[in-house]
Length: 235
Image 1: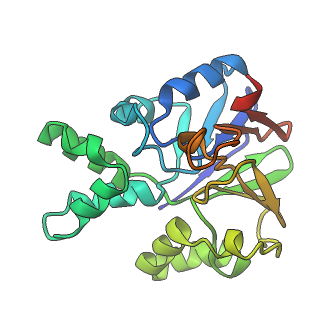
Image 2: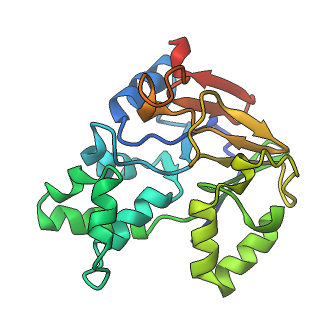
């Protein structure tokens, strides 16, 4: 549920906002910023699938040694839909953009569900003298270390919070999160990446660009090494 990554001494660390199946666009953007698969690392705030056109390519991405996502709420929706004891979960996934999943062979469905179940929900990365935390939505009580502890002792509640909570974004909460330098999140689509306290929301509405979030930047990638933002709208 928690993974820690040490300093990348050879390349650059990046983090991308919610992709939602827009993998062709993500590939094009990585090429545009000269991402080097031999030494760079790409982290993700989750929500890799659903709504976008290339969601069925998600396993190809998860197999890349340089790609490190956390599980978002859409990964959890798919995991729940794969549980035969969860009778309502299939319909919930379907109406939230998961139609692509039900067209796959059963073996492929199980493979994707297992891969999602193996993802962490919290990632910590050392980048130079800075510590970055990555979750999908937010942490408990503005405290990174407390959230890590609660993930051990109260896994269900903590997972639900870090994958679903929107209070920080909804109420423009600028209280900093303790225990790290920056927290990277997604989950709540906005037009442009936003910093509230030391929390950076990278979900700039990639899958909604030109639709519900008409003027969004599309995909946003943060260069964690140089603290530079790359917006799809600039390419």
